[in-house]
Amino acid sequence: MSTPEKRSHAVETHWEHAVTWGVLGLLCLLVGLFFVRYGYDWLGVNFTSLSFPFLAAGPLLLGYAGYRIWASRKEPVFTSQCPYCSTYIEFTSAPEEDFVCDSCNRRVPVQNGKVLEVTGVRCGYCGALNYMSDKTEVLICEQCDREIPLLNPITGEMRHAPRGFARVDDEGVYELLLVDVGREREAVITSLQHMLALNRNQVKDMLDNVPVTLLTGINRRKAEMLRAQLEASGASAEFAQIGTAASPGSQT
View 1 (cartoon, helix red, strand yellow):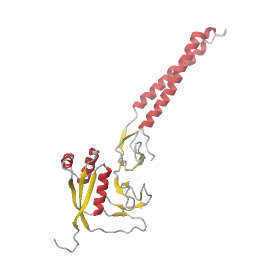
View 2 (cartoon, one colour):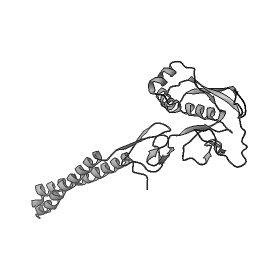
View 3 (tube, one colour):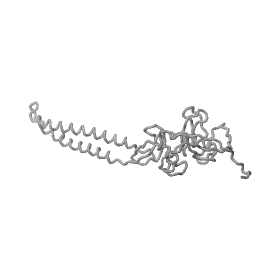
View 4 (cartoon, one colour):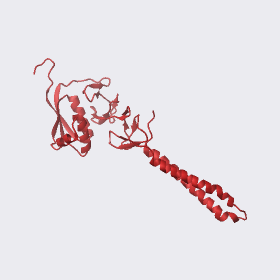
């Protein structure tokens, strides 16, 4: 299935037709009126009869122009929000495939008719912030063009590692702290609601006490990913080791 037409393009097409046919309609009326007024004795020949086709075509063309203006207002609206820049994009039908955002020019992932959330991932080579979704299979850094090892955002386990990548397990236990909310407070609230499974009021109360600990007892990979997700929303976060994960055979 092809990407649906953006509503702005559809409306623009309607108006282009409306202007074109409207101008032609006006010209037909003007030519018809000219023949009515001056055609009876123009160069000694009666051209009055020539006015009838023009006078008949003019209203028809103007009527079609008016129909295209009416049709532009009746175009259906399906709104999708870009997960990168939060811009709302209007389509004439619900998108079923990936599309490009008009504002940030990034390709927005769509699966089963739903826009997927994206997660910020920092490149381990150059530190640049990149984004991945559930559809991402291979992630190439936009800054240094190296392939970035992918982690599952829920489990923190390796999803995909590039050839030659050496995995180093970290048995440390970490806590994630929110240091600064930044300017995009609404984006941070939304991100924390999904991250912590809290309601809006609980998150707002938490933001009033920054710096605040968000999560404790998580592994390093998950801490890095969640920090990148917060930074993508404009906030500042840090994580610190608070201990070492207990081995399976140890006793508490």
